[in-house]
Image (cartoon, rainbow, N blue to C red; front, top):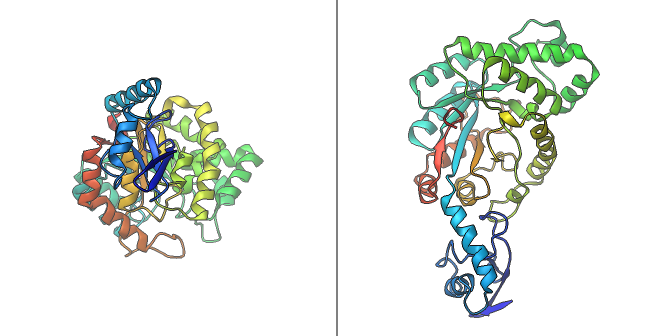
Length: 359
C-alpha cells in the first residue's frame, strides 16, 4: 500500500489497459482507477505520486518499469478501430430517421437492415443516399412476416403468420429436426437476397435478439455468408469486465444476458473463426443503458485492436411498446451518438471509426 496525502492506493490492473499492465492503481479514497503512464493528472493529489511510482521511482522495481514501458509502447503502436453499428434499420420510420442522423451528425458508421420489416424499403433508400454507411443484414426470426414460403416455418409463427418465437424455443426446435433447420436457412437466405436485390452489398451479417449466437444457427449463418460472398459475421463476445468500473452500471438482466451469450460466442469462434473480424463486442450488458459515459469507457478499452459496438438509436414514432422494450432509450442513444463529447473521446483516443467493409 502507498499512503499519499491522506488517501491510499493499491496495485490493481486498470480495465482501460491490456492484460499485464503493472502501472495501474486504484484509489480507495474516491474509487477511481488511474495509470501513471496514461493519466498522471487525473487523481486529485494522487497524480504525481502515481506517476513517480509508475516510472519506477520511490516504490517501483526496475523489472516492473520495463514491463510497464513495453505495455505502454504496445498500446501506443496499436492501430485501434471501432465499428459502431445501429441494429434494427428498417424497423420503423422513427428508427430509420435516427440512424441517418446518427451517421450524418455523429459517430455511427454501420447499420444492419431488417429485410422483412415494413420500413425496410425506406432504409434501403437512406443507405443509398449515404454511401459511407456500411450496410449489413440484421437476420430476423423474432418479429414481422417471413419472406420465404417454406412450410417448415410454421413452427416459428403465430396465428397471424408473424414470427413469435423466443431464442430458447428456437434453439429447441433447431435441435428437434432437420426440417426446421432447412426452413430457417431458407428464410435467412431470402432476407440476405432481398438486400442484395435492392442494390446493396452487405458488409456483414448479425441478428435480431442475438439468435445467431446459438451455435446451431451460427453454423447456418456462416454457411450463408460463404454462399453470398459476405466476409464477416458479428462475434457476440462481450468481455466480462464491462460489468465493472469504469463502465457504467448495468442491471441484473443485462449482466445475465451477457453471461449467457459469452460462452456461446466462445463455442462459435471455434466453429468458424475466419468470419469473425473483431476481438470484442460491446452493448449486450448495456442494452437500454448506452449513453456518453458508455462511449467514454469504450474509448478507454485497449485490449482489442478491432471492436464492435451495438447501438439502437431511434425516435419513438412507429415503435410498438408491446414488441420492443427500447422506446424512450433510443432517443438517448441517438443523443449520445451525436454528442460532441463522444466525438472528442474517440479523437483523443486516436480510434479510427470504420465499418466491416473497411476491415
